[in-house]
Length: 125
Image 1 (tube, rainbow, N blue to C red):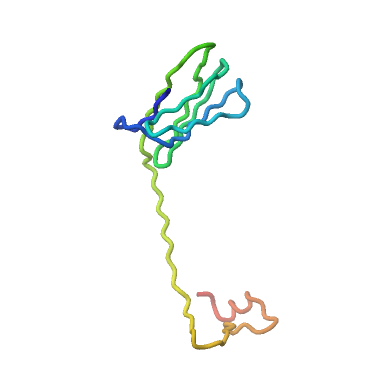
Image 2: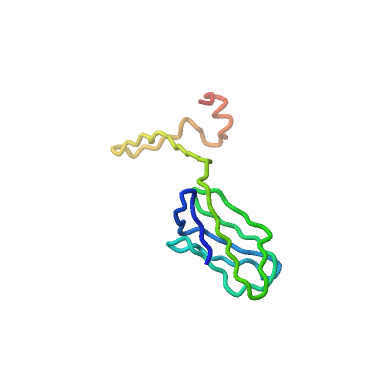
């Protein structure tokens, strides 16, 4: 079993660990358990690329991980906290609704008039 930890040495559960290489079709996945352990069993000999992904941490790619016949290898990985942060702020004003009236406002748009001529007549705001 191999382990994924953070900078403090604490185990990281839920890391998406993927392995791909020419000796296997597609890729194999093995998420880490609550102790940060993961395992790929019965791999054919060859060279593999391993990728480690967890939200909030930087992605790690390990290329050239060699597996020989009958061997057991250890590929312990340390993930670093990501320094990239994004914030999305959504603001807006609620539309005024008069629940006492059943009138519909057309904003002065007349039948057959297109929106662009209405905007050029009233000015965009």
